[in-house]
Amino acid sequence: MTSIFHNYQPFDVGLLLFPGIVLFISLFILGYLGSKSLAIAWSIATIKTSLFILYFGFLFDGTYTSLDDEVYLTTGQQLYQLFGGDISEIRIDQMQAIVGGTHIIYNIINAIAFLFFGEYYFSPVVINIIISAFAAVISVRIIKEQKILRETQLNYFFILLCLHPELLSWSTVFNGKDTLVLFMNVLLLHSVSLFILQRKMAAFFTGFLAIFVLLGLRFYVPFIFGLSFLIYLIIYKKLNLKKVLNFGFILSLFLLFVVPWDFLSYSLEVYKQEFINPLTGVVHFMLTPRPFFTDEIHGFLNFASLINWILFPIFLMGIYVGFKSRNKFIYFLLAYLLIFTLFYGGIFAFNGPRHRLQLLFAIATFQFIGLQWFVRQMLLQKTTSSPDKAGTQLASKN
Figure 1: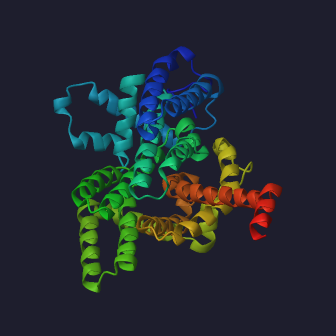
Figure 2: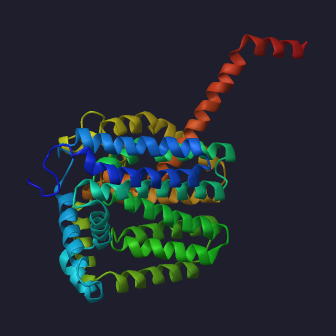
């Protein structure tokens, strides 16, 4: 497949200089906002920018590109050319005619990337990397608001999320909308956090912004999220039947009036045809791909998939420990993770690592809780097996 956005070889490093500077400064600012540490901000900005320069300046050969990202680039270029005219004359129907689908938001991001960094494959990737750091900043705020971790642990969680292998792989190598979908999921989760804190107006506006963007990315995500929230309210808040029906009625009206009926009916038919056993599908969804058994286009996920497999038992322990904490937000996070995992695990077309990326906040949270438990157990075992500690205990008994 030929492309006008790359020639199947690394880009001239000179072309990457300006995007690299913008990327480093943006990541440094976001890194400081998320950690309040100059050292952490500098380290994160250096690592993520270096990986971007290394991949596109020395390793890129077009292997990890697909028809999807070529479509985003082409429609983004057409929108960019449209924006180059008289902006006051641009109409929504013109933009929709160019895009021809529900991914208009990400195509606009491609157009903006071309405006700042030129019409190259790497241009939207720069914005994706910045979005990934922004998602980490909001994620730490949620963790802090809900007191899931101690203050001294927040920076470790921030580093884990910023440098998480799955997020690094998808946001640095591939021009896809999945990093933006992850960010919108984080905003939706933040709206729930604000709701739990009784900051309902802030929760409404944050949720509304995320829903508005998601309707132009993956229209079904707000409705699956709404189902998760409803289940949380029923179980934890013990809502009566009348309130449950009212919530479901409002959600249904929103679905019918916002999403075109012909597109909705077509999507439902596709989902019906793609339906698979959700029980086996969930296992596949959480563990795909097998390390070093990926197809060529997903070869960049080999290391990330290895880490995912290694941390999977830790992740499960994190769920158990988190559930025992009786934290309100953790309860919702479990409902959210369960519903989305069943949904994606039960549909063949969605049963893959791209859709798992949008759940990374929940996955990374439970991975961190599990790692914390594991380290604590190791330290306890080391302390009790220490000769000095054993002598101290014996002396105290005497």
